[in-house]
Length: 257
Ligand code: 13P
Image 1 (cartoon, rainbow, N blue to C red):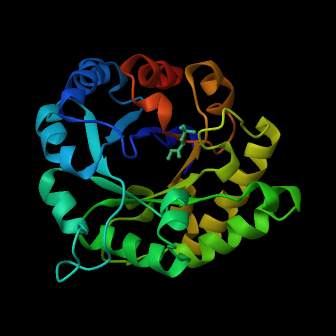
Image 2: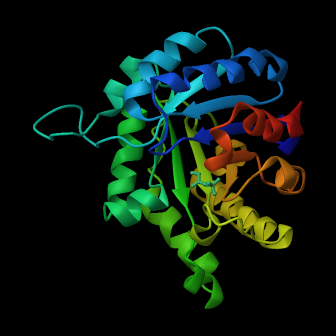
């Protein structure tokens, strides 16, 4: 699939931010979603308890809703956890798995992330699988080795009977040291890692891997979006802090308008 045929995805990860009153900010995003029809997909991943409210509000607007994490199992005795099926039932169409904050705060391994990605597929959700190196690993020249290992361990094998990976898989490259710090890699560094990820995806999934969206995440703002999102093999963004305000989120998405 040629790069020009990949429709970018601009996804906001609200992390542990937002209350029911945030519906107003979400509503402002929804009001502009139609401007991006056919040009980019716009998604917000709010805290799980807001998914049903947001998804019902956004219905038909073009703005879509995702989760931030899921349990690998369908149901059971797992207090406090939420299954992919529950997210889908609430109106989510995707779920982030393996975010570095989950990997760190909850000791999630590549194997756990892979199980969650498979759970997403089982529930009919797109899995947004996150990878990225720590600062010490970058400084040691180990970025590609780390990211390659995470991809090998976290990406599920494609199930021929399900949707192609170009539709149900997204990879987000988020250098851990760029998250919430205002720091970003150079465009050349982003280009290198994204080209490497593209190579891994086509090795793993054949031609379908060429259509998987690879997002960049880490301190994306309206002021740097033009530079970061036009790098080859950058097919959108995963945005934290700047996705909380409609003006910033839409200002980033405006690269594709
Ligand atoms: P920031 O955009 O706040 O750096 O967060 C990025 C991120 O972790 C998105 O998942």
